[in-house]
Length: 282
Image (cartoon, rainbow, N blue to C red; front, side, top):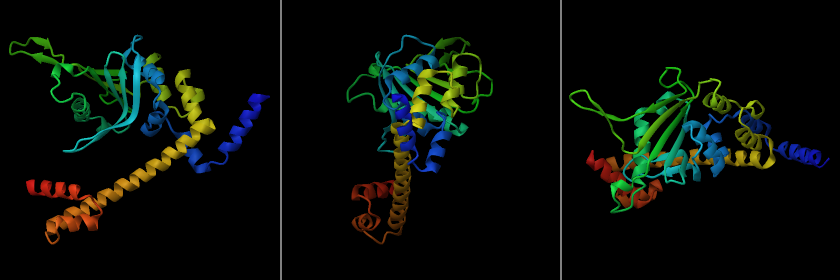
C-alpha cells in the first residue's frame, strides 16, 4: 500500500511537468551526450561500471568523476569533456559521446589529449609525472566501418630497416562502435546506450539511473532544469558571440578607442585588448 501511495504521488507530481518536456525526456538515450552526462554526473560507481566494460577490466576503481568538465585555453579554443574520471592509480579517463562522425576525428582526440595534459602538470613538474590517460570516443556509427566493437589506437616506431618498436607515452585512444550489437558485454552496453526505454536495457545498474531521470520526480525535475540551463547557456553564448563580432568590426574601423569599444560592446576592456592584439597579429 505504501508503494502504491508513493507511485500515485510521483505520477501526480510528474503530471505537473510540461507534457512536451516530458515527451522530450522520455525520448532521450545515453547516446545523447546531454542526457548521458546527467545520468553519470558525480556517480563514481556507475562510471566505474562503464569503464570496466569498455576496458574489459575488473580491477578498476574510480575515485572521482566529473561531467561537462571544461578545460580552458586562454590562447585558443577550450574544450568541454563529457566525462572526466580518475581512478585510484591516478589514471585519467575522458569519455566522449559523438553522434556525428566529424566530432570523433583523430585530431579531436589529439586536442582533447593536449588540453588534459596542459592542465595536469604544475610549474617545474617533470614530464615523467604526466599520468596515463585514456581518450574514449563512443560513436553512434561504426567510425572505421569494419564491424569491430572497439578500435584501439596503438602507437609504435618504425625503423628504416622496417623494425617496429613500441612507443609508450602513456596515452591511449579508443573508439567504441555504438552500432555494434554482438551478444557480449560491449554489444549489450551499446544496445543500452541506444535505447530510450529503461525496461529494455540489459544492465540493471544503467537502467535504474535512466529510470530515475525519466520516471521519478527528482530525476525528471533535474532534467527539466538542465534543459532550461542549457537553453540559457546557448542564448548567452550567442549573445557573447555577437558582442565579440561587433567589437572586431569596431576595432577594424579604428574610429573608437578600446575603452569606448568596451563600453558599447559590453565586453571587459581586457577582452577587447586581447581581440585587438589578435587582429594586429593577422
